[in-house]
Length: 304
Image 1 (tube, rainbow, N blue to C red):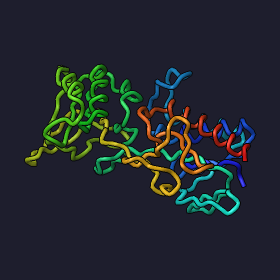
Image 2: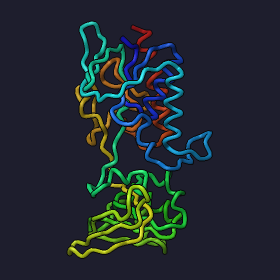
Image 3: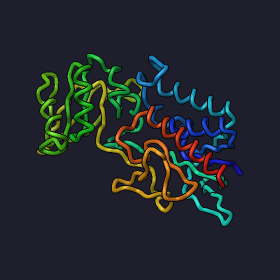
Image 4: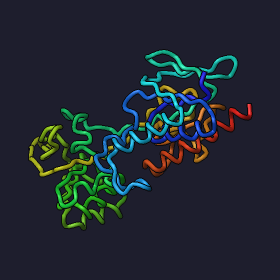
C-alpha cells in the first residue's frame, strides 16, 4: 500500500508527488495518457519561472525525472473509479489492476474541447494550439486563426493580434458571446478579421509539416480558405472528473468545487490543477495546487 495515490501525471500531479516524497510519504502516480499532461503539446513555453524558453515535452520530462528521482512510483493506467475500504483506506480501480492508498489526490486535469475535424488530434502541437500565452510567440508575424467567440477566444485573439501579421476569428454564431469591451477592442484592431456564422471545416497541411491554412464554411454552405500557420481553438474545456463525482462536489460545469486549500467533501481526497474550479489555469497554478494538495494530504495522514 502506498501513502498517496495521485490520479493524473500532469504538472499538478507530478508536483504533488515531489512534495509528498519530500515529506517522506510513498506516492504512486497513475496517468492514463502521456506523463506531463497537456503541456507536452506546446512546442515552446516561455512563461515558466526559471526557463527563458523550453519545449513542453522537455519540461514534462524534467518533471517526471524529478519525481522519479525523489522515489515516486509511476503507473500507466486509467483510473475508472475509487472506493473506500472499511479501514478508511482507498482503492483506485484501473484497467491495469487496483492500487491501494491512504489518501488520494485527483489531478485529472481538463481537456480542451476539439472541433471534430479530420486528423485534429494529430495536428495538436503541430499547428493546433489552445494557449496563446504559451504558444503565441511561435507565430510572431505570421497568420493565425482563432476558433470561438467567448471571453477566452477574444482574449486569445487580442494577445495574438499584438504578435501576428493577421488574426482571423471564426465564430459559429452571428455575434460574439464574450464581453462587449473585449469585442470592441478586437474589432478595432486593423489586423483582425471576424467571420460570423462560420464553421471551421478542414485543416490544410500535414501533421508532420504543420498547418498551412484553414477551410471554413459559412452558414449558406459557401467554403473559403483562410491563411493560417496556426489555429487556436478556444471552444471550452471538459474537466475529467466524471468517474469521481461520488467523492467530490462538482460545480455546474463539472469542475471540482474546491478552493485554494484543495480540500473536497471527502476526508482523505484532495484535488489539484485544472480539474479544480478556478479562474486561472496555467502550468504555474497547477504546480501550486499540487504542492498545496500534497501537503494537505500529508497532514491528513499524519493526523489520523
